[in-house]
Image (cartoon, rainbow, N blue to C red; front, side, top):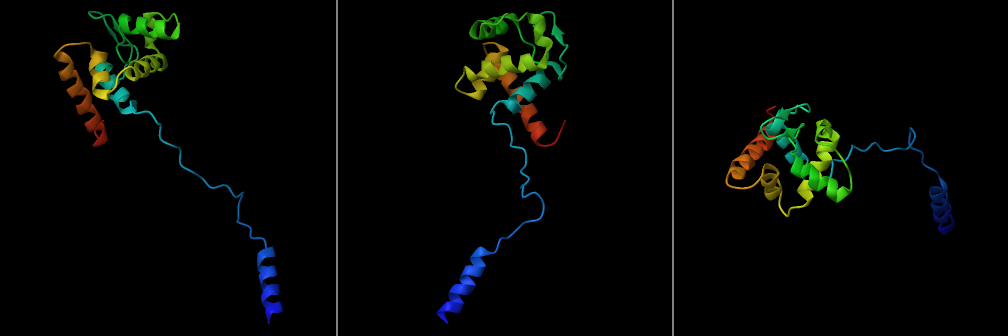
Length: 141
């Protein structure tokens, strides 16, 4: 009886099991691990309605995120780059500058307020950005 048990165990262990297909398990794309993505999208909407060619002549702010020379100077100094303000029409560069800016602050709210400047008006700006984030989360475009 023990021989039959061991024989069945040996046969069971030696049988190979194959799955159909190439054996790959499809996985969904991971979400970006950046806490500022929603803020970036909201700031671009508040600043320019996602218009990469936007220029605010009064403030000399350029591009999708309305970057001013002082923010660009800080970025250029930190990264030892020599971008011109008109380079901020590139959404990719604007995003890099914005993300670098946000990383300088301990909270998202402070990063958003400082993006706008300083003073009491930055709280109104923060409220607009937050409102936009909530609108998008609720499905409004």
